[in-house]
Length: 229
Length: 274
Image (tube, rainbow over all chains, first blue to last red; front, side, top):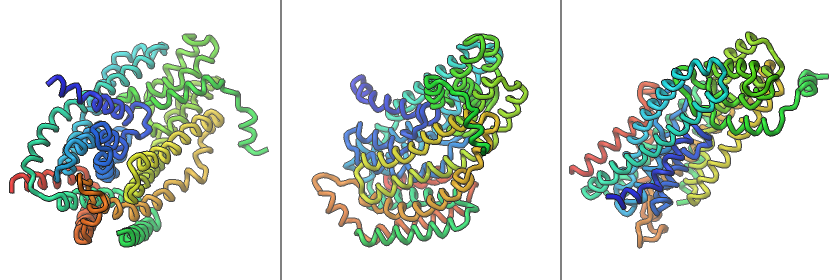
């Protein structure tokens, strides 16, 4: 058990760092799926599996606008988990599907953990309100440091718990998997592209010519596809 | 002399060390984000280095009053909050009346929030992500795909924060004029069109690459590529089009990631149980 736990530590540490990037520091979007899952895959020994998982997750995450106080899936830690799982089982036909499923479910849980963190920050702020109103020099710095530390701990624990939960479960599911690689990937790619396409469509609502731009792009994309095959 | 030249000539110099500290702190402006004061404590934290320059220095009466004022409720898009940080630091050091500063603080929340959301979250972020997906679809290697995304996105991200702090400091309480520039006014619509065009090009190519899947040793990648038939690609494109149309019609009633989770759950159960 202990060696297994230790082998997960590097992934959990990366999960903690990328979880921090989602909102707290520095929001450079190293936590976006296409980066985070690729890193997860590289850590688990197969960067290409991580990249493919990351691209699928990026398409699904495209609809999420991290606006203000809204609650949304937390893709940073979840993508590290997804990338690592895709790499761990990459020889098996259903690996990508199971990894993406685990990743979305983890992102959902991650969204709730961020909500909890914001509530915790609120408790700390209420406790320090008197000092804050007095303009005490160390209070704002203390609040910021506490928030950063709690966010790192959140990302670390979430990644570790997700890996401990999903790895054995994925192993069991994949040992009973009957579908071939191609049909599995057809569904996966179609669902991800549908979410991404509808997200882009919604974003551009009310913008003149935007939908013509999409159609023009689609024609170009399909033409490149036909020429490159 | 134009207004902007007049402002530039009047602008006091903020020491480089203070400027760099403020910029670094801006990267952590959301560290203590909460539902009560939102970005308030974070904004106070970012402006604090400039407040040390007030008469009496760190811990003096002016410093304490200003820090208390700047740590109250505030909300904006985090990158655009740099505009508010620069402007408010300037207003405090200029000795503007507290009521005026508080009115300005309240008035800035809406514009800095909506402009930032449209330009960054609904514009630059999806644009950068789709550019990376296009690189992925064109079979770029993993490091190149990641690099494309990080370089493009952060050129905009960091550039915006640097510009915001500078424009805020330069304009002070008159910074609103900087937000009316053509780039910020027309940028969101131009980006929306670019996002749509990129989505059209990148998504079919990304589907193709996902379908090629992962080369399972000892089969070389080229053979896997050939094995993916036109039927598979056409099926995926058709499924994506139908499901995408359904999602667009359902609009805000359902989130795509929930649909994806449900479809994959059904697929997993089917594959295991059959």
